Amino acid sequence: MFKQCTLCGHQWENREAFLADPDLEIIGYQVSFETIENGLFLFNHICETTLAIEVKKFDDLYKGPKYDMALTDTEECLSLCRDINALDTCSAPCKFAYVRDIIQIIRRWPPNKPKLLLVPENGESC
Image (cartoon, rainbow, N blue to C red; front, top):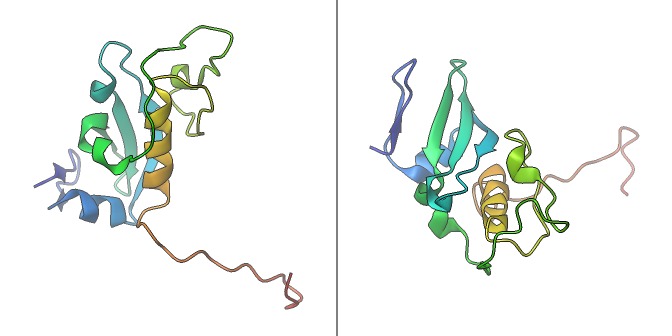
């Protein structure tokens, strides 16, 4: 089992089932400045509880570059990690930036999901 809801008891057998569940929404990220992998992704479940799962459970989803240096509290830092509710990507070449890319992967799950084609109300194409 990957995770069990602490309030309603719902169980997810694996990470893919967890990420594909429409009754979950990622709402935040709690950084661990000591050990990146121990940071927590925060998810709201439909039963109105918040679930926390360590970054290390999702680390392999990211295939891009990782930086060695932390830029926390420097001029280059966007301070996104200090805002638990910030879900945006970070453009700084910081060792914490890749976690914010994982957030985007989670938000767009499943991979290769077809993009919705928005049609204006008047029915004309863009």
